[in-house]
Image 1 (cartoon, one colour):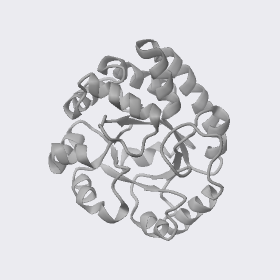
Image 2 (tube, helix red, strand yellow; image 1 turned 90 degrees about the horizontal axis):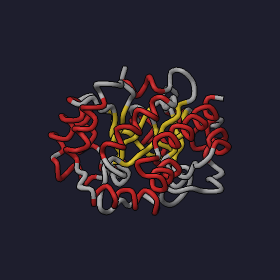
Image 3 (tube, one colour; image 1 turned 90 degrees about the vertical axis):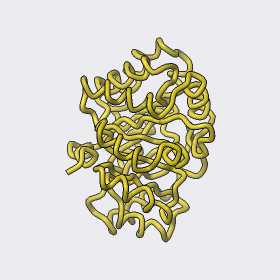
Image 4 (tube, one colour; image 1 turned 120 degrees about the vertical axis):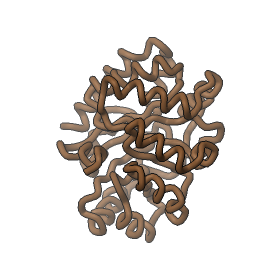
Length: 258
């Protein structure tokens, strides 16, 4: 069993996203430990990219700041190697196809296995084109995470049957970022997944920004993903964001668990 499967064994999972290198690598390391301490079940580490098409302005700016700091894939791998000396919290990379193409798919997958990265999320790779990546990552024990959205419709059944780790359920149309409302058919979407693949967990992401929304989304899913709201705190407080992120993540974890 992969570590990703274990994320969902003890109830609802709280998953946090941060961009590596924002505001710097040293602070990213401290944020990982803070999120672990706060009870986070899985951390998504965003590898900065110049054209993050799935991201809203908050995460896009974080990626820009990280790139200006010189953050690259090797820096991210170095960070994970260092982090693994202190914590075994499950980690997933979230990035884009070009980042992996540039590094080399096989080389990237091998490095993920070496540094104990548990999953990869590529929001710009459609289901029909995933095999080029998934086959290689599967060889190296890295779960390729599938995404579904309210517009996936007939493709949900196909995606569900082949899904590994968990399914990233996109809460609504558009890019990442805080929202006041979500798609009305999320429960129906998740129910469809469960019919096709009863054992695959579903975590809802995109736009969840407070404890009330987290609790609501957890009530219809197996887990909740929060990114932009955390990245916004980092944007506002920079190197002084550690304690504030810890407090916010602790509140979210409690809401999701309850």
